[in-house]
Image (cartoon, rainbow, N blue to C red):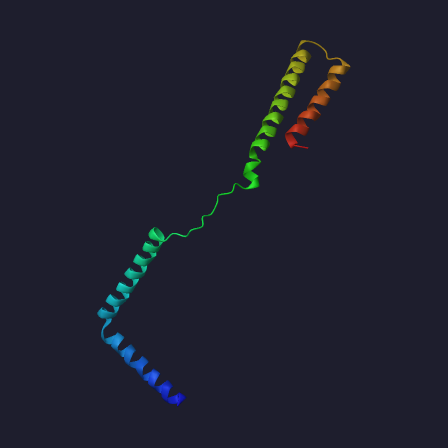
Length: 121
């Protein structure tokens, strides 16, 4: 009984395959109609039956903290510019005359502070 059904299905498949090979233009037409209908249904579903839920655009923590990071970077930049100005003043003082020991210590301190600010440590 199972082998009879198997043979029947096999024969129907063979006949269907032969019909496809004999009528390629009709098969192409049917396939195109099915594709057009499926694409049409996809567009109808998209425009007329949109899902009821919506995805909320939550801002990741990385971007919500960016204002604080930008503020910290600006603050560091201001400190660095202050250090550079003071070092420039000490350079001008050195060109005009000899530096004192406190000036040398101040230059060393400012240079270390600048390196710390630049490296972020």
